[in-house]
Length: 409
Image (cartoon, rainbow, N blue to C red; front, side):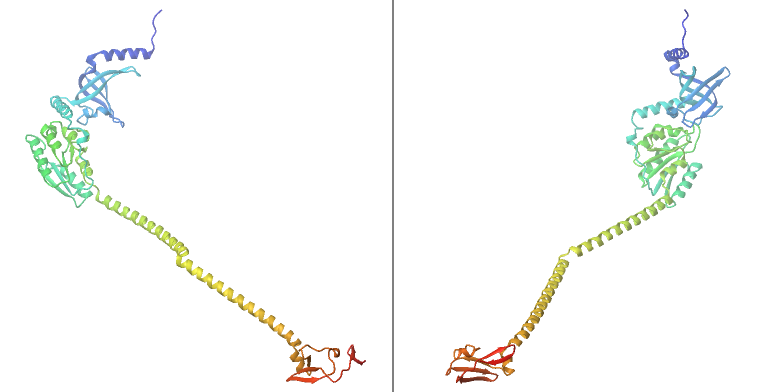
């Protein structure tokens, strides 16, 4: 019976054949670029063609450092990478890791060798990168005195901060002596009181930008104590200076924006912070004023002086209550006394005496109420209004009184 394989098995087998072929794992292919597309993910899809055929290629975003220029259709390039099978679709393609323009291969190899050497020495390490200060007063620029780069830096910097001072070192950025001129500019500005240095130029070919790939420029940037922003070429151009610098800007204009903070935004931010601070302080002041009033009210209620005042008032009220109670009691007693006095007045012997009655007592001062209490010859005392009459009994007449009538016995 014949062996039957799935599509996936066949694709996997072919992929293993490509993987085991050492030649295909590191190969350089030259040709003309066609169907070049920069994807939003950062990947670059293109084809290499010549008079004999076409080869599909892709450069992933992680390998974009291997592209030192803006690739476009029609460019004659040399692509370094590996050829492998995309197992899902069953088609092979080249996975590019480095791309150079044809004819610039020797310079590019020097570039890659120096880049690898300096990277191994740690000159690209992040821990050596100096932070770019947010607010600067003096900006140093190392670039050509004429050209679009210096004008872009001046225009954007002064637009963002009109009070900024720019110190330009007019350096050669291309040709013989350019690297030495750039190094001298960096060293001179490093000795001045500048806050940040921008080192750069406009775009060009790898030959035009080669001064920024020299080792002496890289070492000057690495040894500079002032933070340096590199701004060499266009967004897709990468030089050794970009990797050594404290910060890379894709263009000179972008370098000016990174180095110079927008003065107007700072003023607006300060105004916003001032308003926030005022509102916060007002809110805090109102809060603490309310708390103070609360504590004042509470203190006034709980203060010893207030308590003493309340006790004094209470004592005064009690004193008034006692005084009023005593006055009412005295008034009641006076009223009772007057009633008793009236009653006693009706029973008083003196009043009876004043009405013509008299009081008779024997010699022992005992009241005589009956004739049987005396005998003839006894001495009696008769009390009248103005005195006492002493008399002797010579006789008695006994009478019987019934219902106001008198009858002699």
